[in-house]
Picture 1 (cartoon, rainbow, N blue to C red):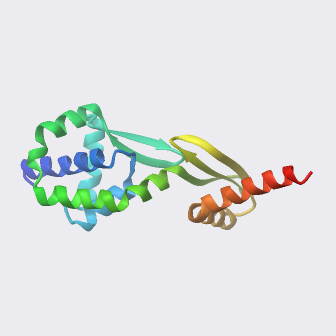
Picture 2 (picture 1 turned 90 degrees about the horizontal axis):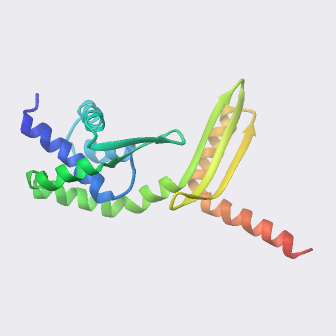
Length: 177
């Protein structure tokens, strides 16, 4: 069992990472860092996120079936008071992780591909956002879960290509008339 200073350090690590990334961060990215670095196990991390959310040090947001976390003002104030308790080596690892992953995290926030099932019919939503403003949103109905998954996977991989192709097609057909 961890002592109280280790618990505080673990929570400060989460606050520090959320502050450094300056973006809403998905659970999967938080887990990737914390578990790969072996700073905390899965269950402890889940517990810390829950406690930090309940005590309003971080904000949990669920949008487009995706959960993200951001640091709150209260969390930021606490971090500035106790940041010195985080070892320099851990801060350096967090800074390195942020530098390597920030663009991908930002990209993941801007490309949405989800689906819902209703009476064996699947509604797929694909979207591209820039600074939280939709550039393109598309809703499709498909006949199977397999098709819905394929569309979501392909959109996530090449959304910018599809967006550009769609725009080109619309603009070219208009210019040819």
